[in-house]
Image (cartoon, rainbow, N blue to C red; front, top):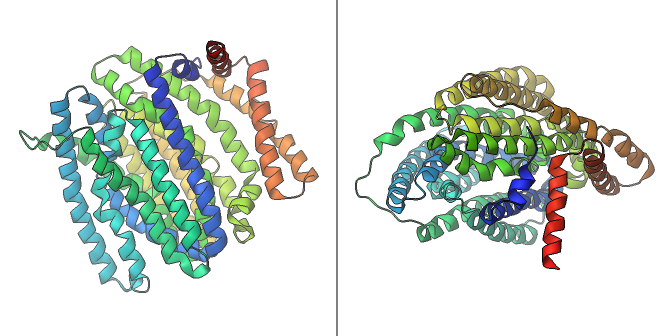
Length: 493
């Protein structure tokens, strides 16, 4: 594959430039929010407080994910397919939202029955009731619609508003270790507030139309995606819940600290793929496979270029990241973070294979099989590793599961679709990132203070990575970006 991602974004049509800008803005917001919120909360609440809140949130989010029955994925494809026909678009929106509303009520009922029936939940029942709002109002999630019509501006601006309010509330209300209930409420607001606002504004783009509805056509694909969602949830959301049951709140807190730092990078790594999903789905639906392949190549190149240095940087700087963002009480999570540093690559490739190839091609059955295998691997590896290795065992299980699932995605793809992956690009990115090792070693032994080591290491490593890509490998990705900036500057003169 030749790298041309920046080329198509910055020298292509202005619409795509705007789409990427707003999706990049959203990615930056999604990165900055946990950076600005989690360190403050973790320093105030400590491992036990963070573990308590994260366990409750994860348990509720598991049911919210089930209530979605795959709609956030399926809805993008269906919306993109009918985005040029307002009447059909309104019909699809009405059908999918109605299904979502019904499943939200059903899984809310199941959730509340469980927390009132089992003594395990009695001590913190108030927390579980607050978190239950995530399930009751899960139908208000409409980002699948905005993504399908490629309205990334609306998603980004709304997210900035709600997250800014959430940060203000966090800094104002959470002051002591006893304020974990307030932290939970603010976390719930940051999710639900965004969804409810988006739901209210969506009617500027479409409307409910209850004439000639056809719910049956959504049932079969949703069953497969729903099954895949159940499988995926076990190793993406339920990993924290499993750790909580098999270990304790402190282990959950340590695992959360390492996972959150790793997952902060994911919105950026997958940002290109997110904006291309609707276009790829549209091309495939209209049998324009050559156009789809071009977009897939660009997405892959972007993913490789960024995920490899991010993964290596997270592994090498894990002690500094943990200390700066979570505090000295969480330093024992360093090894867990180093183990999990492979996730930007594995999840990035998994996102590419599943959302950009398997789902647009309607390979929901294959998606389900891969995720079902992930369920078995996740459960078995957690049951074996967590009782002895606690959060470290959960981290190893997480990486093993993501590797198996991603490998199975690729196995199924190669049966029906040929994409020539540029292995040379992977080698170039690895070689360009190798100098990170002596650079970080130098700063760690010459500077005092984890913050200084972290900041200088990130800046200098990024500089050398790009420099090597330009001078040694003549990377067209960076060269096209520089040419585009030069062209933009010359136009302004």
